[in-house]
Image (cartoon, rainbow, N blue to C red; front, side, top):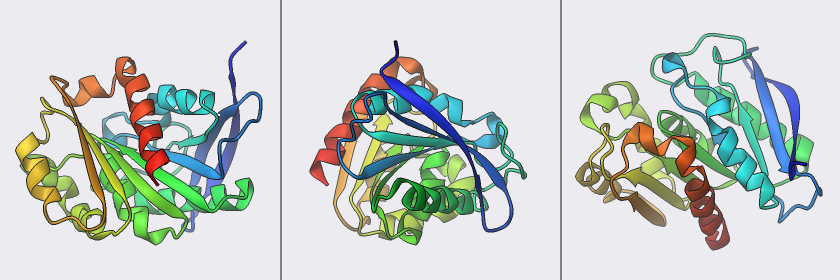
Length: 223
């Protein structure tokens, strides 16, 4: 028998988009604390959807935390259309976090964004009072990626909330030097974790799920 359960829900945004959402939690209903992790998936236009974060969500649930995944607009079974630059999707993150606070009776959220989900989540961090920290898994800070997502950078870099940036040293969208240069101007507490030899899409694979879970749990303990 699995050590976690999954509940499904539909969350509506303030512009009428309906988001397919899943809540992962321990089968024992044992909750570590009143913090919920909201996971924001990869670029919808290239096939990003919540199922890609299922392994991480399960790992967090098995450790006693509640984790929420959702399909952003136009992905999976959610309505609406994805945007090219990810700005409409900020509304999706805000709506899901509001739903979490209202339905799970919590006042602390950790936002975790993967790949293109990282800039989207980063832009939502200071729009949600209950967000107490942010984790980026492969933020696309590179020059080419910045054509699409560069306007998101300022929001997360100026946020005073604690931040963890995880990246593979062979990431094809951001070099280690580009990451370091960007973070020099960042406000608040900044942590980085480099995964030696890992590429961008390689780090998103299931083989790294356990490592992503452990890094997230360590960061939570520091909040």
